[in-house]
Each structure stands twice: as structure tokens, then as C-alpha cells.
Length: 248
Image (cartoon, rainbow, N blue to C red; front, top):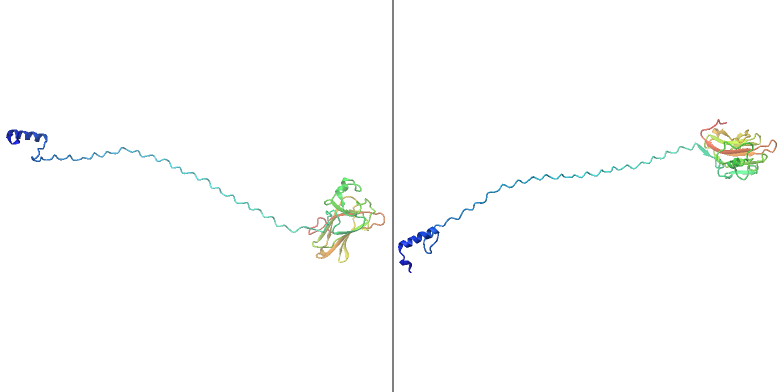
């Protein structure tokens, strides 16, 4: 059937129906386009409350204690030595055990000093043990032969008289031929005769003030050729600035 034969009323009714249904008839009037819906963005949501994180406590490391260096101990300086109060004559205490720095004649003093400690241990003394000696050795004109009649002489090396006093220990019997002497300038300037016939040594001090700066030497003599014969024992010869007993 041809569209031209369709009655007008039917065409109009069809057109209205199509229009109502939104059907576009090809070749017909262009219907007014239905506007596209405007995009309304979704409402911005209020973000959920984000909990403010509690800051973790910052651990500040406790600094290790700084070791305070202990200052190095300052060594206490050694005290300045004072000048020696004593100046020994070479081998003046006989502790070498021989007569080095001394010359001897005859046999009275033996080939070397006597060991006083051994003499005491072996009861070689005259009446009682020796006391008052210094060290171990002393020169004796009795002990080497255990004979009070033995004779001999000891002579020291020459030494400088550098201090005012000369001191020594001595014991012995009184006899004009038994003595200790100091020689200066070729002559005796000091002379001592023991009067101590015991085994107790006594200290003797000589004032050498007028011979300071000179040189001298010692003689220890036991030349007792006549009775009563005797002996002499000496030890510990030294020079000093301060006497320990009253000087002569």
C-alpha cells in the first residue's frame, strides 16, 4: 500500500503517537532534543575524621658519660741530695775485707781486717763479746794471732782533709807505743793512745780545723816491745762537718 493513500487522519494520529513515543520519523521534522542531564558531581564527602597520630616519643639516647681522663700522676721529684755529712777515708771502715788503700808491716794486724762477727760467734774475744763496732770488719792487732804481744803498723793512703772533724772507733790497752796518729806535712799533728782495755769500741773525734784543705794520712801503731804488752783495734774512719762526740 502506498503512503500517499493513507488517510490524513490516520497519518496525523500515527504522527502524534510516534511523537509521544519519541520515535523519529525518517525524513520528518527533527524533534527538539531532550537536553542531556547536567552532571552534578557527587557532594564532596567530609573526610572521615582522621585521628591525629600520637607522635611516638622520640627516644633521645642518653649520651654515654664522657670519661674524664685521670691526669697522669706527676712523679714527685726526688729530693735534691744534701752534701754528705760524712766523707769516708778510702776503706776507712775496712768493709772490703782486706787492707786495700792501707799498707801494713809486721804480722800484728794480720793479712787483712778481722771479722768481728765471727770472733763473737766463736768466742775469740778476750773477756766478753765485742760491741760498738761498725759493719763486720775492724783492724785488730790481737785477733789475727790472739796474741796481745803481736806487733805491727797500718798506714793509710794520703787523703784530702775536706771536713773539719775526723772520727773513728777504737779499743785497746794503754801503752805509749800503741796509738793512732794523723800526719800532715811530714809530721804528726794528732796523737791518741787508747785506754780502753775492753771489747767495747769508743768513738773519738779530732778537730782538724787548722789543717782544712791540706792532705794527710793515718798511722795505727802497736809497737809494744816491753811489758805490759797490749793491743789496739780500730774501725770506721771518716771526716765530718759535725762531731758526734766532744772533739779533742
